[in-house]
Image 1: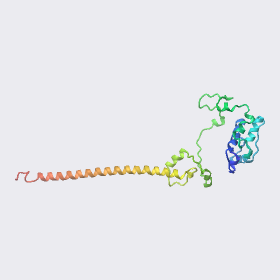
Image 2 (image 1 turned 120 degrees about the vertical axis):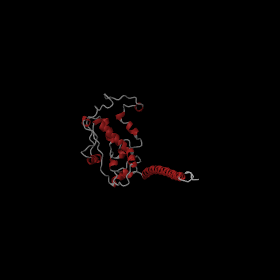
Image 3 (image 1 turned 90 degrees about the vertical axis):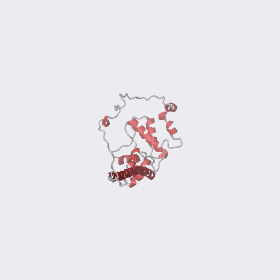
Image 4 (image 1 turned 60 degrees about the vertical axis):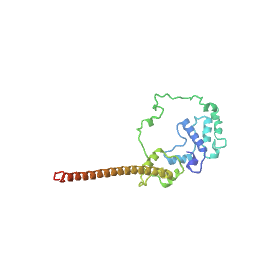
Length: 244
């Protein structure tokens, strides 16, 4: 990241030219321009460390990287009104025709030979020999740390799924759950409430239908019992026994 991002002093699109310089350095040397044993030391080097350019880099490459990695934004190549044009006209790119670049007419100088789509022979073996494991971060972010994510509009699909399984009694959400827009929470809860209402309405309808069926069955039972008693009494009457 560019120094102005780390110092939170305000930044613009010139941070992209810093990133371009860092990427160029990495591709030409095999390592980032500023490295250290931990994150804090790396950040310190980005902010105030000395940029070391290997002697095997060409003069044009060193000059371009040095100008892209200027800590003072106003002195960084590409930060002026010319924007990308100032970089495209640098001596390092003199051999390029940018129209051919955009039309993809250039052949890459090196094409790796791959045996299959999942061939990882171009990766460092220190990574490929490692056993892949999931490493979820279960740390809780402080409220002040969560403030960093305010204003972001993207919400990962996994967070949406979590919202659908929202437990209102759980107050220990990790970032970025705490900063989910209230509209999203409201919409999710309304959907769940609507689903519950539909289930309840269906259940009530089923209960009412069952009750009606039970009432009808009871009525039929009562009518049947009354008729049976009527026929039973009629069979005992003197008329049926031949007294009259």
